[in-house]
Length: 173
Image 1 (cartoon, rainbow, N blue to C red):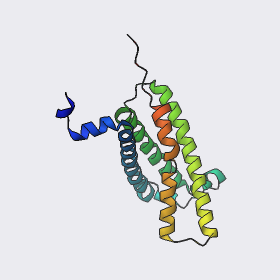
Image 2: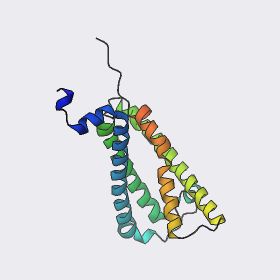
Image 3: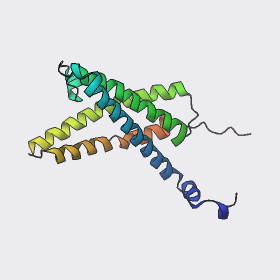
Image 4: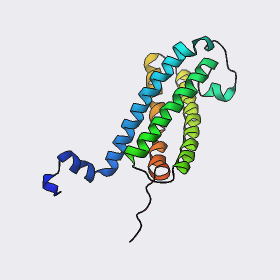
């Protein structure tokens, strides 16, 4: 099809392919985060409600905000579902990857574990900083949470784009 007959949106996405990939990555991440949040809240408030009073004293888990067995189970299940949805959407739609899926899953798992630990540490550090400077309240918590959610994009997009969801190089004929 000639360029004159192409839809303006298609022309834009072809001209700005990398920006379009990043936009799709953000949409996939946002969509999977919505599903993750809904699943988390249902599990926490209904399925594992009786376990929210059972404390966990593991310092590593406490560092990433896990204080009870109910929260731990809700977190593990909802996070797994959210990351699984993001993996599939990014592999199939965003990057159209055709690299070895087993290798991609292993690399993705390593990135996810790193992201969870780093995000827990970053969130704790920001919360401690805010508290030490008397920056408290719902709005401060919201800003800290949004910053904490945005920071991992600095490494998750490049990891997904260039390491995890690669396309095989075309074979020369």
